Length: 41
Image 1 (tube, rainbow, N blue to C red):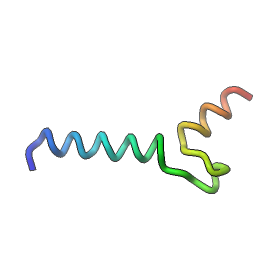
Image 2: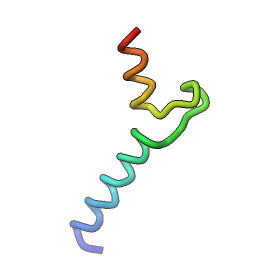
Image 3: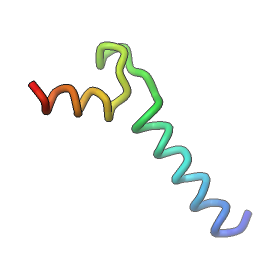
Image 4: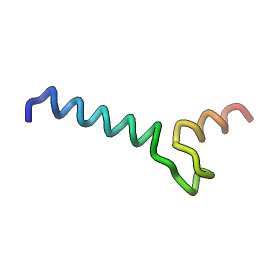
């Protein structure tokens, strides 16, 4: 793997982890969705 491939893989994983990964303990929302919802209340 080149450095660029590793950087891209980490970025893709972080995007998944923060934006698309659903958490039951967060009421079925992704971490970003939960933060946005909580900040609007």
